[in-house]
Length: 461
Image (cartoon, rainbow, N blue to C red; front, side, top):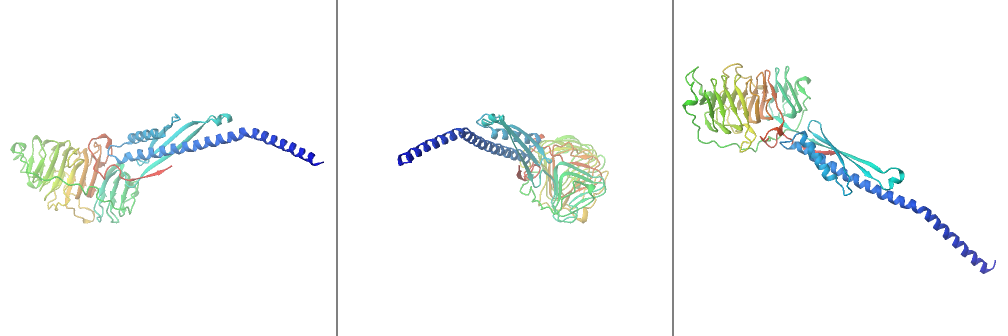
């Protein structure tokens, strides 16, 4: 082969190879385009899934945070979660996400699921026109939730104590004792406490049957949630006049230890400062006007078949000789103020009040209250013996007092909510103290720090 022949051969080979490459490229082009389309579609699916996950996370957090609010309930938490998820999951492509939300763990968590059917362009070639993308998110409250009972004493045995057939029912909230004593919480005999949780800064004594669930121990003490609340300032003394006490000299002389201001008729009285205390007695039927009633240097006593009814009323105890007695035959129905200095507070004790030197003895029934466990002496006693005290709506705050409940009937069961914060809380005999937590069913606010949760929110997917 001469030089010219060799050159012609190389040219023919080059033309043949170029043609083969073009053919191969033409054959590969659909595959390359399909792979690129699939990659773009996959990237879009990953992006959309991340968007739905963010929507679900935001929704579960928004839902569970409803339980930190005073008027929250399960329905409000679910509605909030669903609305948040739908608002954040909308896409420009016009897809319609499907959202479901539910409350879990006794009002301590909200679970949200967001799903969407995403159409596929390339998938149609593979007989897969769409794909289902679904995500879920759960947000929970960590820490004490819905606190409805707190015994403040840091050292006392039986700071929170139940015995005989006493019962506390608090299925939607938590019970707590700050006492570091090995028996800071006590349950004896047939007493039972049922709650979301029960926690003792120290230990507890009692059988497993006394507490449902059993108390947690060595919990961190809680700061008094109402320590910053200031009480009202006493004013001029109220003068009720003679006619509110028509039985003044009938059925015996009234002891001023039980209250200087005595009412034995069917009357309506108003708020103000009751110097020397207030005694409702001898079958009186008393209706209270809304407002704040200050018991200065004297107790509040209702006894001898008297009834005591008030809406949006609060009682502040200050000075010496304070305390409270709702006797066995008394009829009590009270709701706390919804605004003002005592908003949400039904009973409020001056935290600087000196000890009361006299223990109030009921006119009938129980006799003197049992001494506190361990011999602890509270500054003053607030004793509810009434077998008809079914509405006590609001917060009972007795930072230096001992709350004693020893009736035989349900207490506060008709209240939307009842919260108790006291130095000591002791239940005897056979009451069923109902600490409801239906915050959304009343316009009476819950003081910050009790009732609805202020716990932290934890997120899981």
